[in-house]
Image (cartoon, rainbow over all chains, first blue to last red; front, side, top):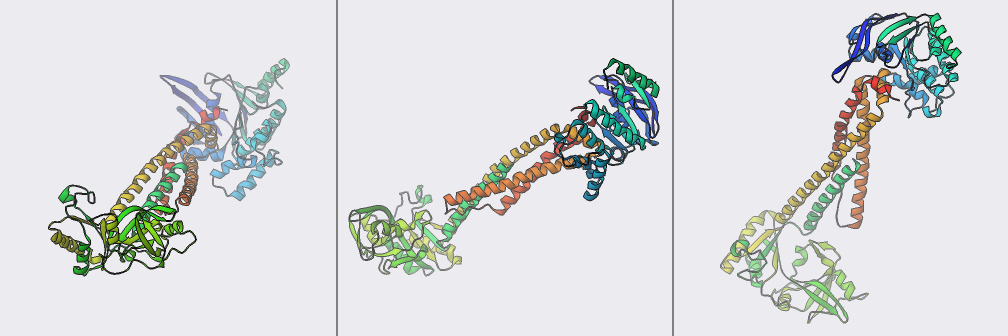
Length: 241
Length: 373
């Protein structure tokens, strides 16, 4: 589903050029569950933005479903983001003035879907994340875990095939973090491709495989067993759920 | 924004009101009028009526006009001064106007009670007076003034009529005057020249020809051209020009406050863009295109300025109502063009100044926008 070939991304920072990604090659199959790990500044977020079509590679080729993303204009990129990709953020990014249901409706508003259909689909999405009791609440009336579930409902309401999550549990306590991860896993089981950026080995261990990044490069590829071992070490140290 | 629109509406309403006030004041008196003022700027170098008139404008001149110029329908000579009018212990300073029976029609007034000054010989000064409604109330509280005697300075005059209430006309409170025969007034005030002569011409079309005829007649009688003749029309149109310009100037001043309001909107929008960078980034991530984001912010700016504009119209209107309740004589109401233009400018300014922040919002880097909490 995802093919990256010698993808580079560099930014001009004053006179200097910062190389956030250097020659990244990777293939991700449909329905896979991939964790991206690495220290801050290693290029995880840049990679996620490129995968999410929010950013384009400076060089190299990114193909999503066989379609070369680098050659698309802004309108086509917008369309890809709208229909193919869902985003889940660490800080939820719900619009505080809108109710939970209206937040879920938001992507459909700009896609020109009729109000009645919007409402119906938003309710279904809220039911899938088990939030149908709280549709009328505003974000500040919801707990962190509930907010993240609303955000997941919003990310999936347009029926994307790729879900990108940036530290989805970074702001949650362990119980609600686990609920959110269970939810994401459930969606992955139904065929949604899931890519999670995380520091947390306990989050990473749920993935099929892991990519460890340093200085803009993928330095290690971890299999399921490696991830479990990694999590085991931190479990033993008692630093993680 | 609201303040700007309100200012435009209030100021133009005042300007228009003043203009209308002046024209209705003059319309009260009819437009076929010519006014003769002794003295001529060109001949003496002094302002008309400010002395330096080589020859008096006399009752004989008035009689000559009456007899020789057929196109003049009515002639009302005017001699005017302020005098103390008293009855017993009650006294009052009022404008005393010496004139003739034609004054009533020329000034478009009507009589409330009794009779007006008698028609007849100009030169005969009878001791008669017609008083304004207010004078009647003050000097004869609760009594019928007709047939009673008042003193004007040292002169005893019999009241034969009371004018109908009229209010102010061309700056003179008609209710607070006393009218006496012109010859009496000239003797009373010891004047040899009339203050001015008002003539009503039969047909509006004859106005210019009559002006020339009167000028020629008086030049013949005085041996030189020494009067100034104004037509009511020229005075009115000059005043209307001045007040129309004033309205425009007021509108221009007010529109400056409108553009200041526009900059205010731009600031509000810029702040709202920076406050909502993360929302803008989110919208982009959700698959909202740049034009849609621009449109959303523009819609917000437009709504802001429209709300401000409508509030301004409401406030302006309220201000006008307040002014009208304080000065009921001033027919102040905002002209339609001013309301429309103010609203249109408000919207336009709002949209123009909304574009910049909207474009800035749309260009925001979603990555940067979302990185922040």
